[in-house]
Length: 235
Figure: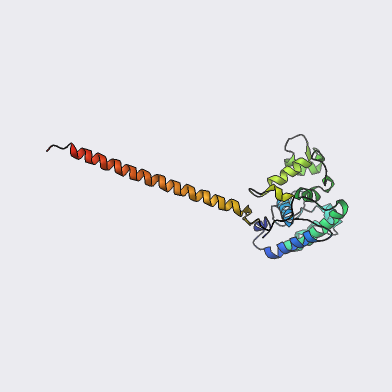
């Protein structure tokens, strides 16, 4: 099964090699991400799978590495901009090794997203405040302040993550290991596509039947009226 959101990668990205590297990162004993789909969902939430996707504060790439984080990774944002998508994954691995060593391995996609978006919030309660109005961090993420109270919490960070999930994505999978029986086409689970096709076919059959029935009814009515008119003709 291909990982979720890989269809959104640029046309020039080797998707097979990209998936292999993502899976390798997740199985790294110093990282231990139970479901590699969690990582591609995080990529999608942070960058819409676009690369290098430099945001307004200068953060770069799939996990939006900032200037200060790049320094911790012994690189620069300028250097990151010159990399290929696959080369950038080297720094994703390095970043996750660093964060897992600091905070621990994630047990859900939400926890993985916290490690990437705001590591201090890892495993914190829903009401934990990430940043408040007046700070640069708040200014860069004010759209996450859904209740407009001047503070962004863990709950609101997770709400943002939910909004970035593919259509009809089963949120139970955000807490469980990869399920090889779940198949996706263009990020929509196959069972929903099949159900949609069946419903569409049923609707089409119903419409055809309705019009054919109307045509037959109209023909019979016209035929009966014609015969009645014939009977009224003088002998």
